[in-house]
Length: 360
Ligand code: ATP
Ligand code: MG
Image (cartoon, rainbow, N blue to C red; front, side):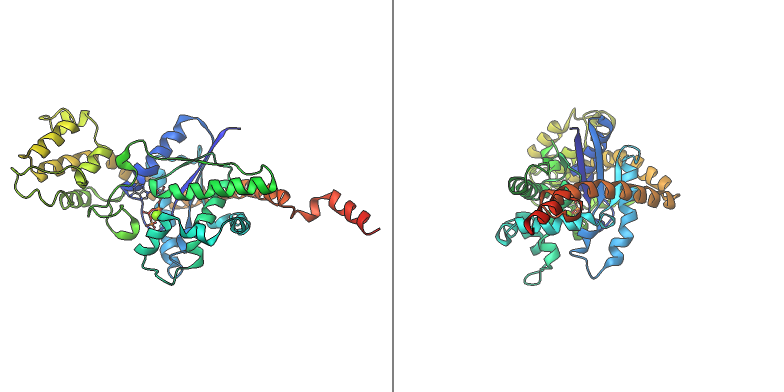
């Protein structure tokens, strides 16, 4: 059986450079590698509603934003199925059955959910839907028999939860579901890109983002006001590159040839870091370099997005057709799941025959 990808994003805002280095860029490379039989990219609106139940308009408005970001980055509807989660009701049905295979204690141990609960200040009023979203994510992944899930580090506990559900399901009901593998970014700095404030991860919900669709001037302003090393006050002072967001972004984005182009005094990032650590290198200089590096990466994305923005009905059509394909695929898996679970009463001729015997 060929390899299959399932991954996606919550429509809670436009996509940012954390999504890009954490998952999106890799997806496009994998899509174009030709190694995958099928690629499903999901806009997780149902999951977004688990912590935005009172704000459906936010979710509705952001579907198109995420879809535009996808197309702008090079996801190609001819090669990848782009779809909307809520349009595949089979996913809810799968989640309902998987819930029987997971304990409350197991969900409570999930470190990502724990920190998200804190971040959202849910305290004692955690929505059940939010609490159980790792189970719903297991449905999303298994419905498409995904072998490979390219995501950022925060998603690792979800994939582990999915693997546990698959193992448990298969051991009780027989080999039916496929155990997926997580595919994290190779570059360690990209696992969890920090926000421009240097705190936590860059996240739509925290407002510390550089968006893929930001205008050039907005990117420049955000870069120039970024968090660096708070103890690097005078240019002569030795600076710290660890936990220094500007260097983390350079780790993720800059290429050696960009030094020759924009900062020819240095051959590569190691040389720049060494100078910063020794002292005598000002933050403004490295921020200007980072700005040039980011502009080079983001400009083509921004321009392509503007092209797709001219034909919004086309983008909805892509999502509609993708959702139909996704729905048919998930329905096939659901049928297999129901058969394995012995809840396929009407298409099982042997069942009726055996009951006839039983009541003779
Ligand atoms: P929200 O705050 O609504 O949860 P988010 O910014 O965390 O939004 P998601 O839609 O939850 O974005 O995540 C989509 C994908 O992007 C996931 O694979 C996730 O791991 C990855 N991702 C999100 N933020 C980052 C980040 N800062 N660094 C690396 N990867 C990230
Ligand atoms: Mg998230």
